[in-house]
Figure 1: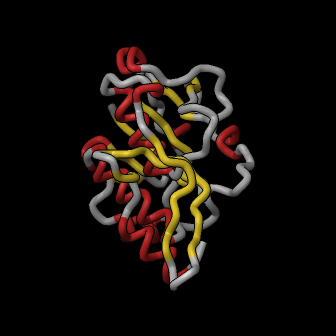
Figure 2: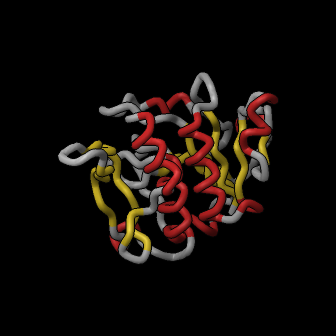
Figure 3: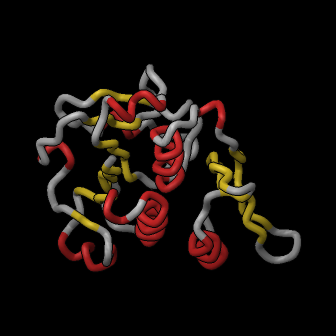
Length: 183
């Protein structure tokens, strides 16, 4: 399975870079691609395959776009149906603005990962778990990850995070970024 992030933000924010690297580590760099990447941003994603073209221009077959607004939920049986899973690389707004609908790939079907909003790296990992044989209902999650700041201060990341070995799937680098720059 190839996991493809279509970078959809107007620039390559550091937050995106960290999430893309984290997702690539989770599914294996050989199974990961980021499309719609400006040439100057390629170096920021060193070690990750990137393309300047959009996913729609790659002439992919057996494609699924992961979209929270899709009617059907991704299921383990979809591993036999699809070779490519395409995700919108979007810094999530809260509340969500449903920007994934702008991601159009010819011939693609659409599936959701439930109705909750995930970070990009978590969406990729949840899809990987499902494609590997687990149903969405069998996965464990935590909603609203809390980053402890100074004493008596915290920042809540209002997304759903997959639990892996009892811990939220979140990059230590994101936690440090939030502590330094806020959310």
